[in-house]
Image 1 (cartoon, one colour):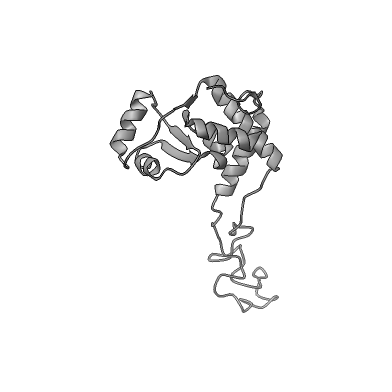
Image 2: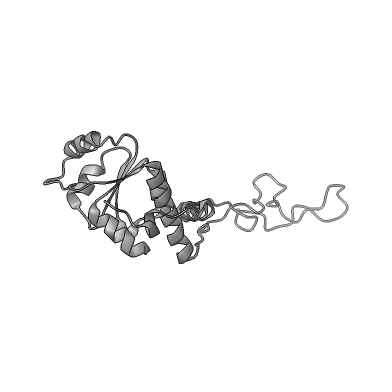
Length: 191
């Protein structure tokens, strides 16, 4: 099948691909680590001893960060690490990733990838005949429930819709299997 040059024949831009992958991984971060500051730990309302005359160092609270059971200074708080890159840059990164994978010979177009019923064993045999060792991404134009159910129990095999494809997915898998309709849909979206 002839692939469109404007989508699958671009000069790969490593900088944009890196930016898209970093943005994706940053959005995936959970960011739920949390520590208690001196205002949040229990105790420490009263000044432990008077300011002068004891010969000891001056202190205002037993929950100071210097003290045992004291609060944490500048510790992590729940936050969102995500950031986004411009839509045009994101699309160009996807074009670059697809072009790079085509150059590596990691993209194949499969005519008939239709399963009558969800059977993991049947899909495993098909992938074995196609020489799909390692991680594989199966890209379809429309949602195929039988294919999704068959693929989800195979380690390293994922499915994706053509219009929801993203750079990290393309670069993360060893082999990309497209249906002809999926190739047309990707070309429509990225042209």
